[in-house]
Length: 400
Image 1 (cartoon, rainbow, N blue to C red):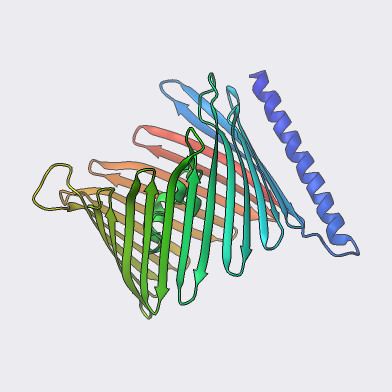
Image 2 (tube, rainbow, N blue to C red):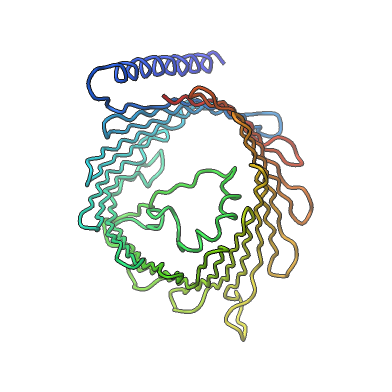
């Protein structure tokens, strides 16, 4: 336990030094006679308590630091638990106008990732190159491998755009596009995505590095959004050629906002692997979304696809209080899951809750409350189910 206290004291000292130093620098910039450098930054500290059955527990502490000045941004995140150091991440970005350079380094707890990226824009064309060195082995037996991702994208007139990603020694290139496999589906299924991310863990949006610096994957995406017509095509290629494709086609109207979308997925044999129908309707403060899914059968059947599930989501905004609900039915047309979220903001307090039910009844509850004043945000979150508390977190963030 003395080791834990000493680490906490070090963290608190770092916070105090960062705050006082940052505020002093900010004051010097703001009060100087010359032009300001636009300095800003933040400091955050979070503690997470996690029970470990039957009678143990773990406590994580995460310290985040960031500052930005004159087109340069630096970020740092440090994580400790009761067993000691867990991870350290650094990130830096330099904005040169038409070009951006960024660097990311991660230790967890030993070196695992180093990514250097350059993005350049000219004449409506964006070119990006990421060079990655990663440890794809274990702590006992490190195995370092290189990877590279080349991105070319352009927005063409009349709502057309094209994006290509090429991976050498790297797969899962869709993470470069925020993990979005079908762009218009992602937009129309916003209510479902919001509920999943409200208390969900932040997804790991890094490509996967594999042994050998060879061509591994190609992703080509075409999008069109013109005169109410929305369509896209995302095609994957690997060493053997065509591997996957997702096609979207639909219409979007205004007043009231209404959209229909059909999504078809093909596998490497050019057979239909999935079929989704999406309806999204928004009238005033009410939004309703329905999704019907079909998939290829796992056993030989006379039909190419079978019903896989039905989901409905509805959101109502009443005087700043947002109520969102999702109901899912499985392939047998039976109730599978329901999520109910309540969000409210009464300055300076924000509150959010998410309740989950399944076929057997109550399955989980998540709560979050935060209060913001004078650039400081204090927050706490809790998660529990019928067996008791699963996780409790509390922390603060100071921005200046």
